[in-house]
Structures are given as C-alpha cells and as structure tokens.
Image 1 (cartoon, rainbow, N blue to C red):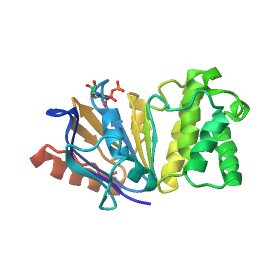
Image 2 (cartoon, helix red, strand yellow):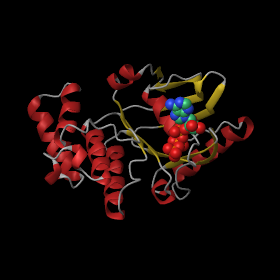
Image 3 (cartoon, helix red, strand yellow):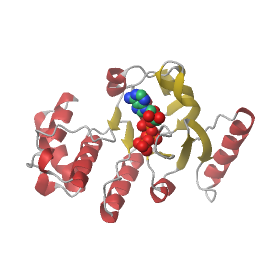
Image 4 (cartoon, rainbow, N blue to C red):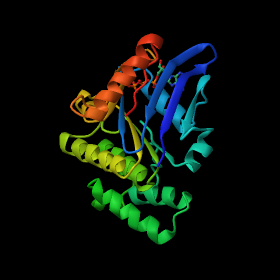
Length: 246
Ligand SMILES: Nc1ncnc2c1ncn2[C@@H]1O[C@H](COP(=O)(O)OP(=O)(O)OP(=O)(O)O)[C@@H](O)[C@H]1O
C-alpha cells in the first residue's frame, strides 16, 4: 500500500483560470482524508486530478514518490475513482457493472462473480444484482457505484460525494465500509459536504475557492496525531500551503 502526495498542485480546465491553487496534502496508507468545502470549491477537481483525469497545471501528484500520469497510468497503479455522477452503465445490471469492471481489471471470471456478490451484499444490494441500473433508485445506483469501487480493492480509493443520496443507515454503512478499506491499508480520499461524515475521517482538507485553507489532522487525543497537527501547522503557517499528514 502506498502514500499519496499532492505537492503544490494547481489545476485548471481553461489556461490561466486555475480551479485549484497551490494545494499540498499527504495521505498515508490506512488513512482517510475528507475533502470538504462549498459547492464549486474544487473537491471533484482535486479527486479528478489525483485520478489522472485532469493533468496538473503546476505541481505534482505521486504515489510513494513516483509521479502519477494519466488515467490509464493511475488505474494501473490501483487508483480507483467513484465519481460524483456514479459513472454506471445504465443499460447493464448492477451486477454486470461491478463484474465488468473486475474483468477489465484482470480478475478471473469466478473471482469477479464472487467479489460482485460480496460487495453488492455489503451495500445491501443482493436483491438488485440482476436489476438494470436505470431501474434502480438514485441511492441504489450510488451504492452500486460504491460496490464497484470497493470490489476493485485499489491502493487508493477516491470517493466523490458518495453518500449524498443516502439515508442515515446507508450512509453509516458506507462510512463503515470506507473505514474498512483504510483498515485494509488503502488511502481513502472522500469528498463531502457533510460535516458529520468529514468528522469521522482521520484528517480534513477544507477547500475555499480552490485553496486549501483549513486543515484538521489526526484527533488531538491521539499523540501521533497531535504531533502531525503541530507539524502541519509548522508547514502551513509560513507558506500558506496546507499540508495534512493523515
Ligand atoms: N469540466 C469542467 N470545465 C470547466 N470548468 C469546470 C469543469 N468542472 C468543474 N469546473 C469548475 O471548477 C470549479 C470547481 O468545481 P468542482 O466540481 O471541482 O467543485 P466541487 O467542490 O466538487 O463542487 P460540488 O460540491 O458542487 O460538487 C467550479 O467553478 C466549476 O464550475
């Protein structure tokens, strides 16, 4: 499992109009980083850039010090994205969406089937496996996308607003599953508007108009976290370029 480092990242869709500016953050294996901020602050852009969908205008993104390239490279390095719009093929069933992703990822047919059942069941979707995605509710579609992301067992899971359409019980289930991913050793980066969901992550990067302004590091009660918070403060104050070591 590997460390994700975002170093002085500036990202833009149009030349000269940056959407993210000078963002620095490090997330270590086994840790969850919440990316918070108002609508339009740049949360999805940060996740998309880590995923390799958008190339940095300035700065770098690396895994254990090795620069990440385009999306194909990021996929080959185990960077999994659950996009905000879920990215499911609506003309396939829930099960097929998960299974096809696993087969494309190089899993054998039997293992792909086993993981599909396991992950859909974990999300409470065992009964929806053979249902077309276009026939699922918004929350069921969102959970199918999460099941697909979890099934891929990546080193890095980028989860973009994946609880926005869920009721409280399903939201808790998803947060527990994201924590299990981290416990497995993955880096989890979770974009959210929900302060309660952000609070259960190990650290929080808060974006305001594309700049990382507030950083919460490990809980202060945790000695290691307190040290990390101090270190983050030491780095952020002189440069105004926040660094969270999650
Ligand atoms: N494909 C795109 N082309 C041009 N501009 C874009 C594109 N996607 C996003 N933007 C712009 O980048 C800025 C940040 O958008 P982004 O989607 O990253 O915000 P967000 O924090 O994820 O918002 P939300 O919480 O509403 O999903 C916004 O001003 C948005 O209009």
